[in-house]
Length: 305
Image (tube, rainbow, N blue to C red):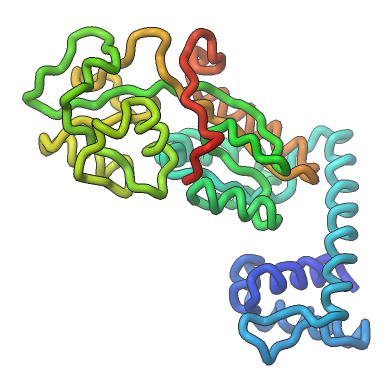
């Protein structure tokens, strides 16, 4: 019996398919299937009912799964403890990040993570908040980067920085020459992201349903292009905006901001990898955003991507 075999059991249980489990585990399907068959032969049981679709655990398989989770948690915790003593940062992190953060943050940090921590593996998944939460609770992801606070009972949160909302105006419009208030947006056509994005709901919290336009876009890049075509203004996260543009205008203080944080499950143990990710993100975000100060927080606790 090997730890790898136990990891494969959990992967098949999670995905309900040998093919998907193999893809997730970054191995060929025959390799994964053979290892599980060897484990079944060693234990003298069938772990999976292969006649059903999706594939399901047998009653004996459910017991194997429970033991596998405990064994792998202990093995990983042991490895993490001795990494703390040696100062090494190594291991595997499955990271989920929402699209309105990934578009600007990943280009800033991913290459640096690989350079600084060559012994660590970072697997990145761009997903909406609801899917990140689901996958963390089901141990399919280790860490999420998204808008917080969420105040989920089984989730731990680590605040990172506070990102202001800015307004991006279309060309040939009466763009304010100084910082604006919400009243300055009244009567303007506002373009928003689609329902699956929490940034849309935070924007509506900020400027109200009455400013919602008839056009909804799937990404920040698309919405910027629509604004450039003169179809309306929009709200953007500060770090995704071109601050050199005279069509990007910030709000008067107290500036509305969203809190960006890391989240993980209660049983998360990879503390050195978490700290490495936290430090890398903060070192690539302006220090001015590290503290909330007197900014107005537009919360995410009742908003899911």
